[in-house]
Length: 261
Image 1 (cartoon, rainbow, N blue to C red):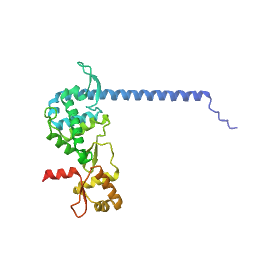
Image 2: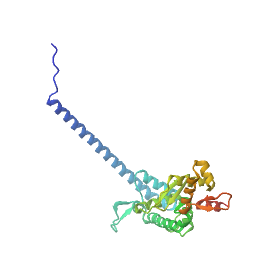
Image 3: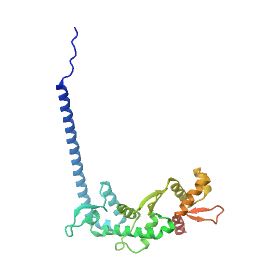
Image 4: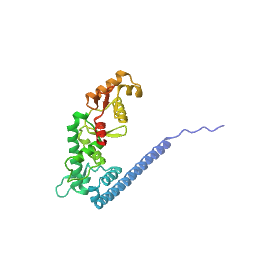
């Protein structure tokens, strides 16, 4: 007579519950150990970064390319040089940014002064460009104006870093990429997909026409005209009616073409 298979008893369920609890506890310990190891590594990286900044402080202040690489090193380990840290200055008790703590006020003041200048330029040119300006053009305008922080040289990377510092203010300033150009947008309005296509297409010849949009994007004439009218209303493109077909130019391309001639 075949023996009957015994059903699992309560003791089996208890053993399973104990094993599950042990696995959960062990997993929690491993996660905490891993997190502590990462915190230690980050602390070491930050300490080395501080030593590097002290050793090369002069180069960081005077060389924009070196300054940009230092900023990238900070970002690589999750340190934003322009965001306040939790370390207080002994003299005033005030909380300063990484730039201010490591290099003194000069570089820190440079970026905030540069951010103010960017805001001034964007506001003064908004009527002519609709609040959209190439990063390279902003760099040229800033360099032509009054000196920043005692005449420190400004690069495109400095402009990008300064615009980044404006984000916490909720001011609408942002860097957007259109085709192969990085543009500073200084108005809260977002470009829709069609508007982005038009502004990207303009970079090829410097202008577009209704027929160019129809031929390249397969749009209807109504769609092409509507998009161009919207861009004209926002001052993002200028109208040239002297050609056989009305052409639409961007202020940025016109100035770049003028500077090359």
